[in-house]
Length: 141
Image 1: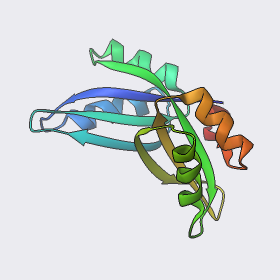
Image 2 (image 1 turned 30 degrees about the horizontal axis):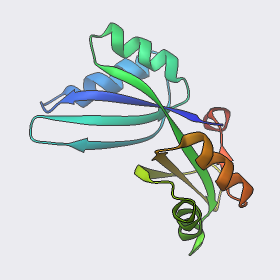
Image 3 (image 1 turned 135 degrees about the horizontal axis):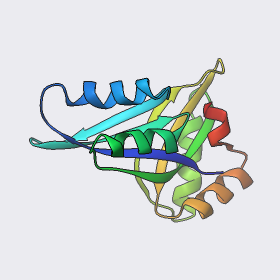
């Protein structure tokens, strides 16, 4: 039930994001969500794509530093309080969120939240047992 996320080391220089996204596009990989955390000299680009292994292979062939990490992707109703409920479930079960980002789902009225926790499998189980929809890699394609 985990989703695979690409993490790409990005030098902070003009054109680097274009090179990365062009390589992915040329391989026929569709980007579904992304976020970047940066410092003055470099950043970490995190991507959810429909074909993570293909994207990783292409980026490594281009000489880029990339890895695949497991994350949880929740599908929540897009209404006040739904995200807060999911965060409370994790907090009450002592599961820490390391980082997160969100994107608009193909399903109308749904928000998709990607989270990295300190306990992926346990987090998935607890969220599912509390009625939170957990999306899979197949839901991305």
